[in-house]
Image (tube, rainbow, N blue to C red; front, side, top):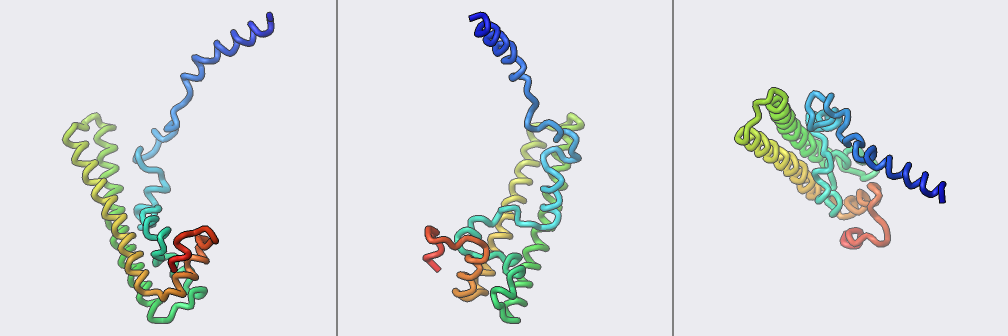
Length: 177
């Protein structure tokens, strides 16, 4: 009984310490832009997809970047490859432009809090601007998937689906191809 009482006392003594656990954000206060990791910043600036086009990709609309990576295995014709490069380049240019603007707006928002000048209005303006840019970036990537879908044959789309690892016996989208 004495051991049980000691154990209980030790367990109870650790409860306040558990409440003082570090925030999952610990270390992020050192970022140059607190709300974006270095990887997120790099991805926005380089026009990467960042999962923005999952609705298209996972429903059978191939992405132009991945199609170019798989060009030989998809047996793209020279015309298909040229059209895909055009779609990809247009998407990249627009996504980079928007990504650069988004990073700058995140930086301004961060600086307003760092300088203690943030106000309800400035925060609302920044957040609305950032949300609009995120939406435009997502739309840019989704539109590229739509354009890419029109370039490939049904057989190439099925092969893309397989090569990307989506084709399994239980996949409802695989059977739609």
